[in-house]
Length: 223
Image (tube, rainbow, N blue to C red; front, side, top):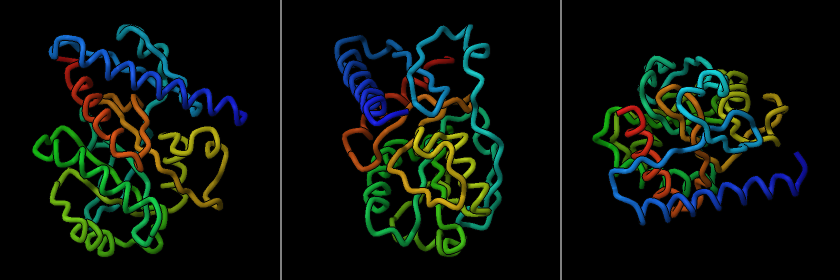
């Protein structure tokens, strides 16, 4: 995807988020706002009926298995039937990562008592971020939620999952491999069926409130 096509795609998402916010404010609080699906790394939003999802949205988050900050193995089993948010950081990052962690805490603090919401923060420098280092990082940021996991493991597997499953760097990263450093500000929202339903700029605090609204609507989808 070229530069201007990416700009247009990003503008499309921003317009959608703004419209969604207006709808939420103008409608009855019990009304469910249908979120789009994202099936490709260009993040073109697809609005489809629930009956068509299995046919038209084949992309899901692939199986994985990584150690968390407590040296406990976390896998796709931990997100089965749950909504989760994924991001990609490293503990020695001095630029966007601290901001991203602070902003994700906005969402975490609102949902920390909800065991059906999981946060997965994957380290992009797993050779440096051992479980003990991640544990120190989690404690230093005063994160007590047991459902927020900081993950480490094989670099190639983390990078492959990030780029091929989460589309973490959009089209720019989809064809890259683990020899090229992964660094992205994106938060990815994934539904209970492991399908991507939202992308947010983790450096912007106001997008966290949009994510909270979107999570609430995802919770209502199958109720």
